[in-house]
Amino acid sequence: MIVRAIVTDAPRGGVKLDSMDMDFHDFPVVLKPVLTGICGTDRGIVNGSLPFAYNPHGENRLILGHESLSVVVSAEPNSYNIKAGDMVVPMVRRPGKCLNCLVGRSDNCSDGQKHEAGVTGLHGFMRDRFGDFPEYLIKVPGNRKDDMAVLTEPVKNVEKVFEVLDIISRRSIFTDSAGAYHGKRAVIIGTGSEAFLFALKSMDWGFSTGITNRHPLDEIKGKLAEDTGMDFYDYSHAGIRENNGIDLLIDTSGDPGTVLRFIGRMNNNGIVVLFGTNGKAQPAPVDGDLLGSIVEKNLSIIGSVDGARIHYERAIQDIYKWKAQFGKTIEMIITGRVGPEDTGIFLKKPADEIKTVISWGE
Ligand SMILES: [Zn+2]
Image 1 (spheres, rainbow, N blue to C red):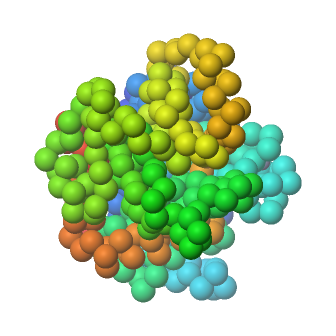
Image 2: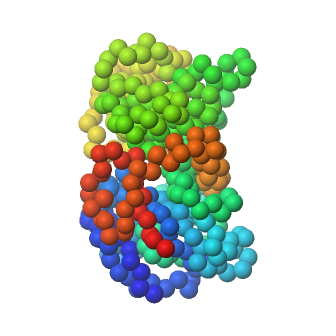
Image 3: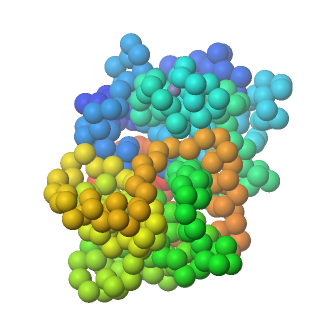
């Protein structure tokens, strides 16, 4: 069938809504996107700044889109209980042949041979129809029809980070005497969608949680932070809470200077999680005193990417827990809704954007 698809030519970039003739006979499940989310990775591919992105083998274009909430059009019997009409979230990474990939942990791929839909060598979900295999589809509990599950893909990154945090934190006592994280302080660098999602999970754990950036929050972000109980501070104004140490630092900016500035303020046994990436960020010098303090303070610094099936499942549960907890406030994360023809959204980020989604219609 002829489908509309939002395509680029990776890693060179560009974006257009194209028509393609595709057949889905090789796939047990055929799906139609309801919503697809746009993130920094999509914009990075479109503006040609992500050298690791590439087209599927032998093709001269890549269909974008790795964040999707989709409805099942048809499914063969015995497809993990998936049937027509089910709301599902497709996983992004598809396994290569390394041991981690073979046990369902392509998020920990050890040789880089995995693929990522809409990013590395595999067509993404920004098209009228796609085919897939049931083991990569996560059912939305209760088959809910609202929009929130489109956040599952970004939230699964958060779930993996907190799993890694749990493992790393066992090397010393990281809790208070009651086994809780109350009184511990988490700082999330950045005020984009991923930063807000990290902060929500951090508050669930009981951390006193703040998000930070070098400019004030706009009205929507300010209200979201206030109504969910997270702190915000503008770190361009030195002196604000600079004396409070940090126990958990999560970076979503990928900016070395900012990360180093905050690493200098970690408490003993603190954990630093690097999640954001920015290949165009300015370099920042590291001196011996900073390296020495990382040693003396017994810090852990870890990088974390992607997540496994279990993290998608936990993500959907947390999203609906947050919805029950915060009601309409949590829906404020989705700040914009455009059609597939509005490809300008990839070239210019709206000023007040937290998460923009593409609606694929009925
Ligand atoms: Zn692998």
